[in-house]
Length: 227
Image (cartoon, rainbow, N blue to C red):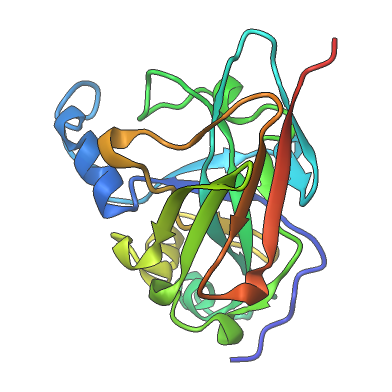
C-alpha cells in the first residue's frame, strides 16, 4: 500500500510489557494492587516533545542520578489518514520505521512510571534513517544491537514480541486514534532478571541492526547536566 511520509512527528507513544521475557519477569507483580490481573490491552505512555533527541545528540544526566536505562526499540510512524475506519488505517498505513532509544531513570514503580523519570529533556534518541514499511518487511526478522562505548550489551529480537506490529496497531486503535505523524514504539525488551543496559556520564550508546543496515545507527552520548 502506498503511504505519504509525514512531514514531522506527532505524538510519540511507548509500549510496556510487549516482549515475552519482559512480561514473564514482571508477571509475579501483576496480581498486586491496584490492578490484580495482567493487562488485557496494550499499556502505553507518552514521550513528550521535550524528550526528542537527534542522532548524535547528548543526553544530560541530572547530578543526583548515577545511571540511566537504555531502551532500544523500533517505532512505526503513521502516514496520511484515509477516510476509513481507524483500525484499518493503523494497520495499513505505516509510513516508515525508525530507531529509537527510550532512556529512563531507574524507578521502583514499573506499572506507573512517573513522568519525571521518563520525560526529562533529551530522553528519547530518534534515528535519522527512515525505512519505508515495505522495505523493512517482516519486523519479526529484525534484530537490534546495543553497544555502549563499542561493547555489545544487548541484542533485541523482535520475533519475541507478544503483539506484532500489526496486532499492536490494531489493538491500540480500538481505544484511541493514531494520526498522521504519530509514532508507536514496539516495546522495550529486558535482560535476564528484568534489568536493562545502563549508561553513565561519558558513555556513548549506539543502536544498530545487524539484519537491516538501512536503519542506520542511532548514537547518543551521556553528559553531566550543567546548572
